[in-house]
Amino acid sequence: MSRRSLLLSAAALTATAGPLAGLARAAARTPKVLVIGLDGALLTRIKDADAPHLDALMAAGLTAPSSIYAEPLAPTMSGPGWSTLITGVWPDKHNVKDNAFTGHRFAQYPDFLTRVETAKPALTTCAISSWAPLTDTVFSPKVDTRISTPSAEYDTGTTSRAVARLTDGDPAAVFVQLDNIDHVGHTYGAASTQYTDAIRTADAQVGRMVAAVQARPAYAAEDWLIMVTADHGHTDAGGHGGSTLAERSTFLIATGPTLTPGSVRHDVKMPDVAASALAHLGIPLDPAWDLDGRPVQQPSPDDFDALRPRLAARTDETGIPAAVLGYTHTPPTGWTVDNAAMGTGGVTEWRGWTFTTDEFWTQAQRDQSRESNVRARGVFAVADGDEWQDRAFTGTFDSTLVSPAWTVTGGRAATLTYTTYYRHEAPQKGEVLVAYDDGTPLTVTTYTADVPSRTETLTLQVPAGARTARIRFRYTAGNNWYWVIDQVRLTQP
Image (tube, rainbow, N blue to C red):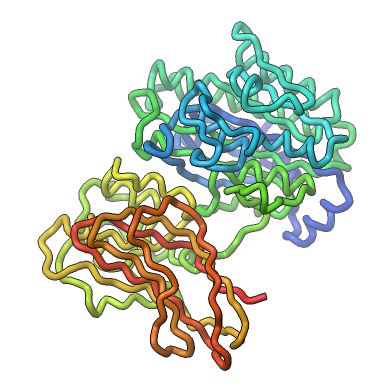
């Protein structure tokens, strides 16, 4: 098959007349999901390799480079990685810290196929894995079919079994894990030709599965969401488990309705795989499930993400690669940064509130828990007194991030939500304040102890007669730690 034919056939999986047309067609067709996991695969190496089937999927849909955690949240190992992808929550919830799955909380945070079976038991689900712990431990017995491929057959057997299920059965949701890229990465390293060869082999196996989907007699009446992802990355020399960006690197390639062909997004996180599968199958995401993932089909615009085109390369930092564009001090429209009390000098990148990315910020200094900032997405705001004081400075870190003046109705409660991550050391302090109609700021909450990455939800009692509310995030510190803010929303019912 020619490369043009591959691109056209993959493109047939997606809506081509825009999101609304895609949704209309999807309503008339039967939704189905195929998730393919490539253990230890690096997106950068996929792009370097001759991988026509994966290239075609990227051209036909969404490509989203992403990153995961490191210690102390969890090491970059397969157990935590696959558990995150399959359950839709981060390791601080599913509690998988190693490949033994000791202390897992799958009863509280089950795999997405089990959620499918619970919500819609008539649907057929299937999980096939070259790495037995996934089908033996992570996926529950509620899943209709769980197959651990014998080691003698490895990915070849896994692929054949998946193709058979896709060809002869009527599955609503299929999960497939291929293992050999990771095996080769451990043996030869991610910079090796053997690793690239393993990607090409996996690419052909992905192609067989996609072809099986497209050859289904009922394919024209079906609405397939196909997602390809990875549990972690690899170092050039081989191996993973540590905190380098290569080890923390993951990705999502997805084709389906409403996903724009050839699009690239930076707001996608790995728990989104499970959430996207459930949403596609028409299963409402119950807030009681406490999922960290959100459907990729339902993007949530964020003011800070609009700053990506303004991001610049390093200025004073030396550990961040020169080619990485990752910081700006220019706030988004309507936002301001008040540095009137901010000290002078210090590291330019972190002087006052900075808008940055995981790729940039975590490489400023590894293994100081910056990698645990998992619930921020895309571009986020950070006040990092620790990094700022790594060069000569005067004064203290005192900077305030100020929101636009949002319209409110006086006399009614409003809800302030934001993603936060705060690492504390006295005399550091983080304060959230609100000013109504640009009056005197009132303290909403104060941080004086560590706060893990989480979404905060605070109720504001809007005074009678108030018409606007402006939120302020003030960080004061010496040579202490940092505070992250993202996805700020102020709503009223």
